[in-house]
Length: 260
Image (cartoon, rainbow, N blue to C red; front, side, top):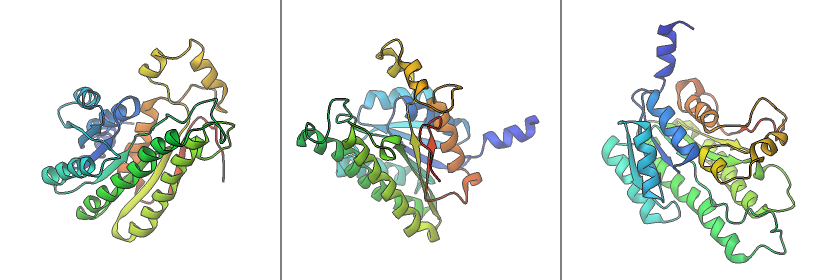
């Protein structure tokens, strides 16, 4: 690809305003990719320090804000900032989750109700609240893109961790509703379904053979998925190149899940 063509490709998001909720491995990669392609970005996280660090790494076109996805007032303030600054949004990527019930020893009979509710409060209520606040801002700009980071746990059976899978499956249902209900008004919605995604913080706290074990669970043996892989797919879907892709669960998981 010549330099002129590459330059055009790398600015696919020029003039777009995009909000991300959920900093850290994938969230930071999303912010960096969006900024590199020309977008203005608002990165939010319950951990304000994590949001600020991610925004600093992304560059001057990325702002940071504290947001608790499960708190309606906090979500309203976050998206209210986007409306005040940009008059709306061209894209939103909901990239957060509570993993507290995704424990290898917890099944239907051992998972506590408190742990189940805590996970649902973030993964179901939080996704609902953020989507409900973001869609009007997409409509204000004449349409846009809603993305949700999903999980292979929603697509395959497991002896444990079913509470997490249930909560992430709810995001798939919400995504299809948004795509179907608001498609005629220019809104596209998709889920990027992840398997194991390796990033520095995860590897720093994992057992030495973690990456090898993660690779063993994939069909594709090239390498384990990285945050940058998810960001590349998200950037394409946010751009005009994704103009006819909507209502889909798109797996970025090395083939660990397969379906028609």
